[in-house]
Length: 159
Ligand SMILES: [Zn+2]
Image (spheres, rainbow, N blue to C red):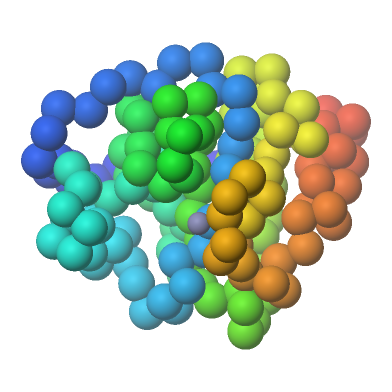
């Protein structure tokens, strides 16, 4: 598993994300976005320091470090304790590609081992209290995804 880093410039100094307790999964909803255009959107439209996610998996199945292990802006009230991973795509309409899903599983299990995060602490954005949007998309089944993570963890099959 390769995580690419690009030197994104943030408008504020970011604070380290220490001891994350959750992983929160998102989709970008707009399937045409990339790391760079998401970064611009979050800066210019939302007036954030920069891209809100900690990691982003593009459609061509590249894992990018976005904020990396610095506190993100992706899930209100959870940012200081959660790693936010976004997939580029609209999973209200389509399922993620098998390559994207595989990379998401690899990235999640990597963090689950590193920070001792159980499968039931891996949540879809919509599963957080007070969230009304469907993120990471109504076709993205979080229970099935957690089952995949459990199997992978029990096989100890990590990168
Ligand atoms: Zn989301």
